[in-house]
Image 1 (cartoon, rainbow, N blue to C red):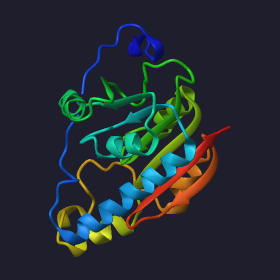
Image 2: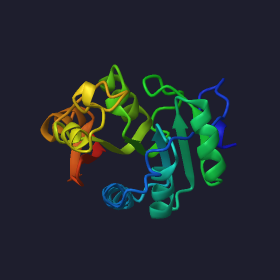
Image 3: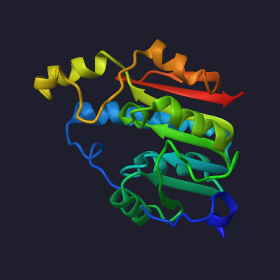
Length: 207
């Protein structure tokens, strides 16, 4: 019933998993918790009842959004089927689907809020994904990316990814705060920006 309400014909449900939120380093945990708290606060502002998350991964952001909003519908998606299965197992409140962010199989304005946290920097064509997010959102877009060059500097400081000058594997795009906000403005009006180190998080109202 949920699938038929928001999804185009032909897509089957799936699920998600990763490990970046499992660190025991107290400093890293402090930073991650600050990021998750900021995401939850911005999500709460939308009062959304139907939520789509792209790149749900471990399901940590999904958990916070569900706690903040208690939505009627939450669809947690990822490109990796293994991730979708993992998040689906953790989050019985969420409906899982394996999708490509650049070609979303959902109807126009099927959701009140579309979330993409730590996703756009991994994509070859982030602008294309953002246009799809705008299409399927009826009101709100919430997105975050690592803030550069701070992100890579912090990686170098902890002696990680030195051969790549601190660039995290899989990061194809690199934005400063202002550059990322310029990208988000192509989807609508920015209502609020949070900057928990080392991220930029933007809440955008669809125009």
